[in-house]
View 1 (tube, rainbow, N blue to C red):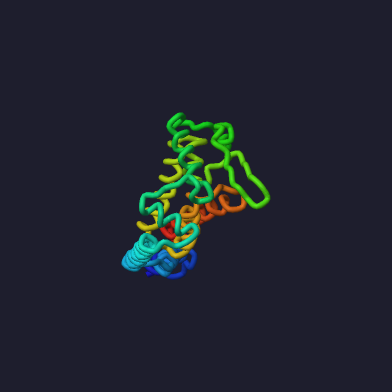
View 2: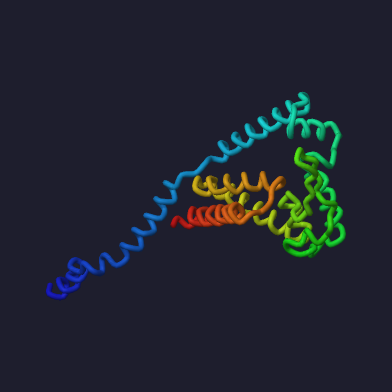
Length: 224
């Protein structure tokens, strides 16, 4: 009887041994619960949103193709009908043509970062009420072309591949809402990049949004 009581006593009166594994189990369950409660967007909802966006873009292009508007939209109307002039887009079309020709000369390494002015493109000339304005071309006014001209086609492909991989990873992880919000900011930046210049007060925000989206996607996967 004494032996049986002694054998039973550690099992019934050992509060430490009974709780050693409890924190790990509770932490694992907590991670699972947090990951299950993490807000996300369904794939069906994402496909519906993408379908609606494509439909709206198609309707907008059809309207521009049919109606000869004024200004920049009128220039797009002319381009859709095959009339492409170097003066369109405040001279961007002419700059882009020169950039494409320059890419063929140094396709792999480019001319060097921020060295576009050394290529001696045809200057930008515009007649104004106060006289003739002449400017040296030192930027492609298209971030993708600017990277291809200055740093080479491989650098441009690497940037596009990194952005595409980030979007694909977010889709595979079920569209975590935090990551989707960051990717929306990145997407808007990528959409305006063909018409703008990389600046110190906008481009870092795009990379910050990409980093936050990547971190949120990984956190959603690990449950942290």
